[in-house]
Length: 295
Length: 275
Image (tube, rainbow over all chains, first blue to last red; front, side, top):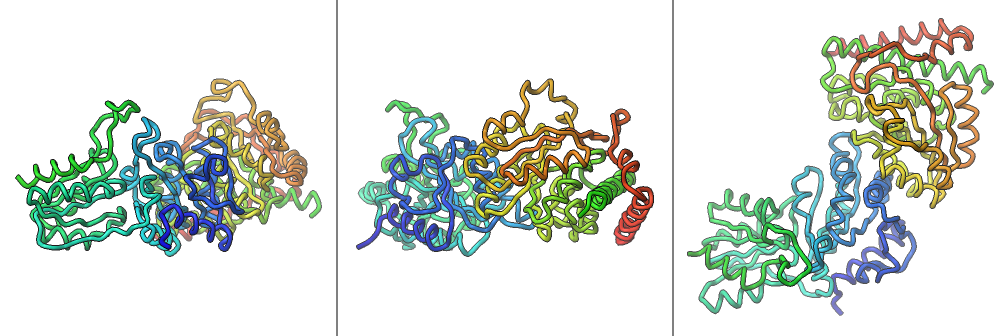
């Protein structure tokens, strides 16, 4: 039977902790649902105190020793605290000191969880040299991310989204003659089918080229789809301003000469009330942006 | 090793660090060093002494790390090249003075953010179980991540010795203007065997010998930085100089000092000629 993303993460983790003698670090791992049931009950789990800044340093110290630790950041907003050692040491150590800090950072995101639990922060890490960054949303993609981590010695930021945890399906890319290529990232990928239906009903034909690898950006399939379209739309589950989506759109636009727009959250804080929500672009918003682009 | 031999070894290390760094001063004055330098002149006794007791430890130092690098036997030529910004430097010329590293002696470098070597060392000790020593200053010890690391080491009974080189200054701000508490009292309350001493080598030896039998442990060592926080400037004559004091204790001190001074000078000259 096909496994979900959560089951895949759990399986990878169990194997690493048991067979590779790896370590998993995190806060409130065992007592609060085993991180959405993505962490197995096995040895080599270290419960961290509620001290975010030092915790990443301790985990990076373990990475220096070569044990390839996994650190779980239960909500990506906490990365603002944890990122000091990540950015200043882990990302730079290979270039500056000549020794690497291979750490697997599981950074979880969630929709509609208020002002410090709804963030998707992969864009800020893309800004810094030294990281590998991905946002796997399927079981196969997650395993690809893990295998990539094991075959390189860089720190890896894995931008997870709780929306994906129950997903068992793989996404399919298309590169037919079309009006538009839609390139979604993270949770935005789960809104695409409905957007395609809305656009199709208005006679707009779309390709879809999914983005899992953010840095280094894997773009062959993006260019293949975009080159057969009139325009492109990169959609992400985070703020649009200064974002991964804008950076990727810019790169693709230069490479193909096609107009490519970025779409993401509005430039305002996310709140808990219904009115103050600031969500991953819905199918309706995607469809409206697509139509605007093709006008 | 008997006490005289031990003191001789410590004195040799102190001289090595002192004369190496005086050469750095000359190199800075000659505009040969492209980046900022952080010197340990006056503080040599600490790493020189602790290193004699922690020879097989993994070492995590901070930005003022030439002394630790040399005390543990780090490669002098590669350190000179690093300061000169050469690819043959111990960090390929990328890091300069605050980022020295030599994995041949299990010494892990620093990237310049104060005290961040403390959690790194703590994580290393946790994951390897190997004895580990972390050097840092009295201001670094105030960092929130440093304090948490001390507590984490106590919680997990880690084999780590924290060494605070307490020169009383955060750049130029004295401790009394920064905090009303003592780090060693905090670490003691956390469950680490802790001591607060001065940087007289025999005092350090006696205290550290006891502490390394009961890791994790913390030792605060009062010392005297002779030069500026960064660079080679001097504000006023130092309150004391442990090297001068050691000349009265170590037999043939002047001969040892002269030998080392010559050796260091020649090594610098050889490296500089490669320019």
